[in-house]
Image 1: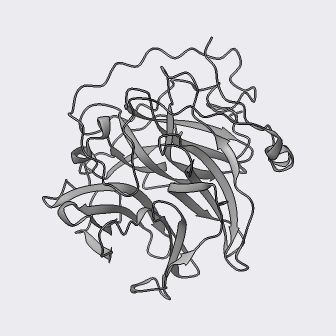
Image 2: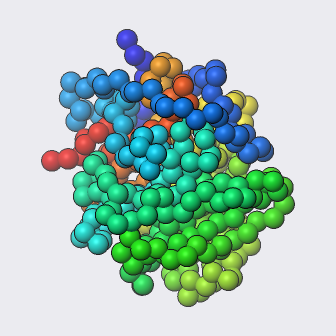
Length: 368
């Protein structure tokens, strides 16, 4: 019998009993370690194993935890390589649609940690489960640079200009330097020339996984330095020539380190929801789980992060490690678009949903 982790069944219970629950994470032998202090070297590309047909749960509406109800059920997002080995999703939801679609996703292919394939791509959907490339859009949005590689996609909607922005990180390989870049589109098909927004100097001076949104006429950008969460804010009027000094966000206990994250605003200005993939400082960085936290930038206070999902203990299935995932609020409930890595280092996307970020109930669990 396949084993799975347990997960709290309500946000209240999670807050009350989290300290009384023991979560066990098994580090996977043979996985490549993505050390924050060393760039990921490419593996020899090869065709991924064909995933087995998923075993369907008896009742997918039951709150069995995110992987009980979607184990091995991947999102069929076919990339420009012709496979579904994708990672680092960012999904935006438009209640009334945007340019004909309710869901827009940015992601990168990343088969077997081959960073030459890790270029920003776009996909669209009207139900959040079935995805395609918008007709006429470039694929990928931006090709691999000669000097290094791309990574860490994010998607931003600028309501004032009614434009979509795709952000990503690129790396100057020989210098181990990274930057944040973007392209802008009025229709999701035709994209502007790339802009280099932030250029970080210093070897291994990591800024990874930009999580960006617009609030109070400013860009708010959360990111990780490979261990802790930081935040910078642009100038008024969305002035990208002016940025605040990095602010350390006191959202994690000392035993956890953040590698990648997503962030979304709430209805309360300055209060933000964070979804982080973290690992224990005393464990392998391969043992990554997903945590949720609420951060009030007005007061500097943060709710203690709550465990959302841990890797499955049985190594033959999705996932042996969780990776950067995307948090989406939809009509009073939440979806989490998960990215993860199996024991053979294949990357896949899936989705789970529930009434709160810490009460995920599986595939289409909130559908009426």
